[in-house]
Amino acid sequence: MLYLLLDYWLSDSGHTGNAYESVLLRAACAILFSFVIVWWFAPAMIRGLMRLKLRDVPEFDHEALNEMTRDNANTPTMGGVLILAAILASVLLLADLYNYYIILGMFCLLWLGVLGAVDDWLKLTAKRRGGGRDGLKMYEKLLFQIGLGVLLGFFIYSYGAATADRHATIAAPTGLGDSMAVQLEAFRVLAVPFYKHGVFLSIPMFMVITVLVTAGTSNAVNLTDGMDGLAAGCVALCSFVFVVLAVIVGDVAQATRLLLPAVPAAGELGVLCGAMVGSCLGFLWYNCHPASVFMGDTGSLPLGGVIGYVAIVTRQELILFIVGGVFVIEAVSVILQVGYFKLTGGKRIFRVAPIHHHFHLKGWTETQTVTRFWLISALFAAFALATIKLR
Image (cartoon, rainbow, N blue to C red; front, side):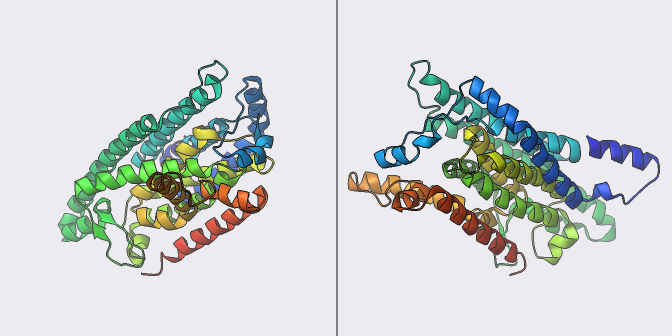
């Protein structure tokens, strides 16, 4: 909104090259603005959640772990509502609301935010009402996540094709039409780390990858959200990397120089990612050990889904496996544990999954576990940024 007002006013006055046009500047402002929103309003939100009795009651299939986490009982959850509100407020204020990818990003955020809120509400109120239901069933969540992935895949691909055709038509009189179309058809290219040319995708493969990345990242962040500050800190680091990637990929000259797929207009997603960084850091102020509030599925599902969405738009799905390495490890630990348990008739690889609880049971304190996972996440983030030049 502020971006559009400044653009209208300054353009009408004949001013050009204004500072507000810089995505990096607006991303930095989004970090600060969303941080302040969450930090300022969190105490009131926590009191409201307490009044509504929306409090967490952690239950694990492990008696020792239940004993270790009993101090978390009655901590208010669904704090993700404030995270989403801060992100939306920052994007509405600082981003170009005519940008197609920003509109899709907010749609993704709201879709998964509502899904997570419904899941949290059912989990937190069913026992109080005697229903005994543990939120939405897994297939119910997957149904909505897959549906979202299909919609995002269709609209991203359609817009990418239209953008490439338009730029090729504009460049045709100069004789650069064909080369420009190839350069801008990034929606067909899967960027591969350490490989210059990438891999071209068919439409069905693009749709499959979109669904897998969106649903997989959403659920992986959800699995990571099991200790005070763990998910918020890792999401903040991951989102910061995608601020950088979005800005580079959105600039055709920079993307070409660094041998990355060029996606015009994707740079505006840097503002969205900046808002995610700030809101997670603001939430971490109250979510660090001992946590005063949890984000719940209301926060973890949309945060993960939007990270996946940004990776798809910027064509950096494989880089996501590096920068989101902690999320990958957490998800794989659950898959291995469940698969091995079923194959062996009850044996386990880890003491409990996700893997952060395994280390907790091995003797690491919760603070040690979270801090060490943050350090690993920071190393993954640094390595992911290094891959930009290693081609």
